[in-house]
Image (cartoon, rainbow, N blue to C red; front, side, top):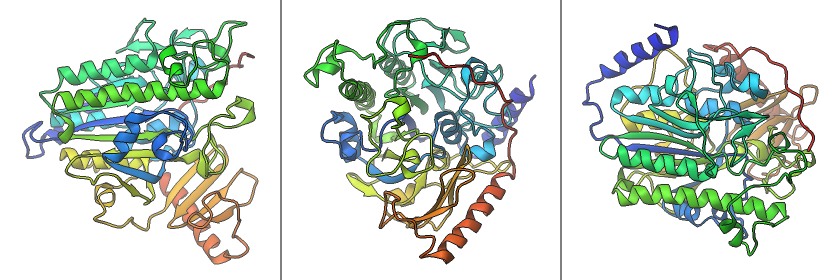
Length: 464
């Protein structure tokens, strides 16, 4: 038996000793993430042009979070933080996994434990359908990390129809390659719906990480082929267009609408099976949109926030989020408390009646009372550090370092959410306090930290 298998077996025994019948009265959990969306690119977050009726309805039926953060400004670390409940600096995965060697190699350390491994001993069926991107080495693949079922792709992005990544097929079912020409967004939704229908008689946990609306990548296209969003024509028709539409902005919006429609089908399945009232739905974006000229994404917007993926300005880490839990959370309200993706795991464990582990540090809190308006946000420190950039937020203030050799800048996010007015000279005591808080946070994340993945060279990118 491998060390990884032994760890999960011991965890199962420990959790099974909790005094409750497996599965009794436990809510279902659906966690939905999307990929590189702009903060202001949903109707319910202020965009009057994009059509997202299902997400708009979800926001009306739940709590819209206006100060929710990813734990990282880029995909691999943000997803690993969600699934482990631990900052990237602590779980060891604080890099965007590069190339085929990086994505199919060891990402998360085998000692890390993911949400499904905590829930299975409590009677949950567990499924993952969509983007993985946290390593695929034997022993750390989804069905070896606690998921009963997996249909999804390994790397950070693939073509929406061919599932190619730098010439390699990226789609898997379990641990075996899986081939289909179905549109990716529909594949993830259909697999989720099928799983929910089969598991409706017991509590389930579904992780549904859509890759929409991640931008197309030149390395996945044949020479001379137009590099543009590939999306079914019916979604382009929502914007008065057709399959030949050359405008990237319209194709981007259509890709978002396709995701919204797919999620709507999943949510209607919960209604049809009378599971809505006993299902916690968590929805958020993995990190901000990349709006740099290098990537040509001049049509996505993180307004009113500065910057985007992969930096630590608000545009890179503040993301749209919605929580729906009928009877436990209010409807059609906004929550402006600073929350972070590492809070999701503690919330799920508490909802499922599973005792939090004592053998490792978790970095989040259960935000249920905050979301319900029964408790104020705690005066805690939230931190980020990625590729030489750094940030720390406490209360209304945020200290940001744009680069390893640059000085920290101080911002009042209530008065200046766009991070335009540096207050270091005006508020030196606040800046000094947050600088100490950042160093304390960074030092703390080294406690109980896993080893990072082996370094691998980045493959040269094809020119498009």
